[in-house]
Image 1: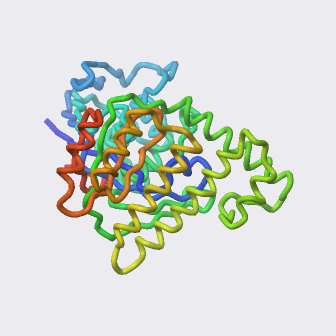
Image 2 (image 1 turned 90 degrees about the horizontal axis):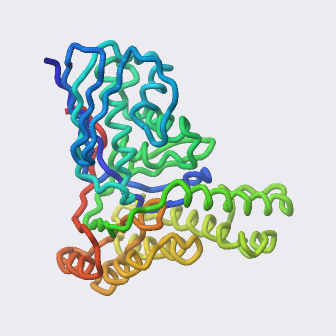
Length: 358
């Protein structure tokens, strides 16, 4: 029996939350929590899929005409996308899908699932020239976002597919850069409050683009990707009161991400400065975009009061997780404080090398 094991890590966003759908850059890293797809050929015409972590089983028949794509059915969406690239399953597999990424916590379990599934399909059925981190990331993005006309950007898929810490230009001139600087002292903490993704992302993206369009009416040459923080007040004067926070957050967070990139490019990484920039990023997310909830606020405050250098909410918001930067030898103390503030799960995270076949 031919067995294929495909794994994909979770991810945390260090800088650039709510930026990729504006075509602005992000800095994210893959972390050592995983979705694993273990597939064994079964000499049938079906994928028999077992997802014990969520107590679900399903069968996908290979020869049955497909009619309707259900909400968030990323497995079927990937099959549709890959078919267009000449990846045509011609035999069945028994598929076991397990994971150590907390579900609905802002650490991209859905994207990791999609990446691991796409990677398995390409390994099993080809074409093999698509079995690269870049292609896998792009195909997963098409399956998870474009196929559903969803509001997300490319951060999740590419940070998981490429691994390491990456700087990702998400706009028209798409590009990425792997940042080789090691970073230690990362702590992830799951609030246990399910995050709100689709509705929240749609509202924030819509309002940010409305604000950008209002500026363009007054300043026709305005582009968000070249906006200067020094001219913020001029831009805000062009925008209606209710849209000001979205514009200020977009420009402010963009400025923070650019400053963080400069730090990552220095010979020695200044983790105190990185922590300060994480705190500044969180300020915009909390006070202008208002994507936190009381438990997240309590966890952030507990981490900082216990000596963390920086802490911020991760992902779309409305719940989910936080990422924390701890000074050396203070991790355990800070983790205890976060638990005391009500966290469901707290763990030390290390940077992972990205999706792969074992």
